[in-house]
Length: 207
Image (tube, rainbow, N blue to C red):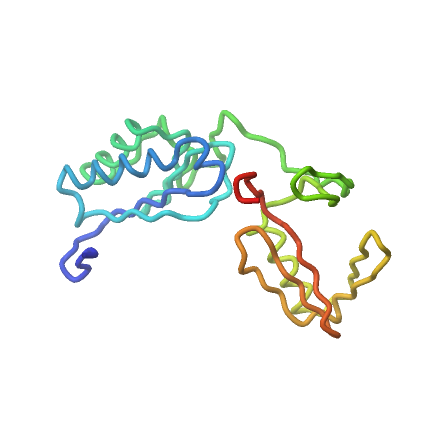
């Protein structure tokens, strides 16, 4: 049975990042311990927890955002999140040593800040699992590539895409952008032409 929202008195919501980097850094363990702490301390109706997609702070994984107040936390552990929950629910204040950012701070406090990625050109590679393909280190699919293709579709931009075999695709002829697969996007053009692009990190176990 879900939470009875009619009787709950939720004042604090915890948004746990569930992107790849946070998962690898132990984010799921943090979330499980947070929910167990909330349940065992009778805080279930005073709080709400939500798993999100990537929140854009991979270098500070695992992360969590607490509302209200816009508190961003970094490098979380099972013990840290319990302290954070207790402070927000019982004292309505953040735990400064664990904060990445909060409202009115002039900058982000990170020990692992990295420079923005400079996209490289595509390099042809004969991958053992994928075969011959073109690979580049680019931006996150959700935050950059999918919006880019939607923009090209909606504006009917004059941009073009040329494949290795010389075939040219004009984005003025794009009729649909489908990002329904976990890792891939389909670009559909007139005359029943289409391109299937892998735009996300694909774990080997999923090949």
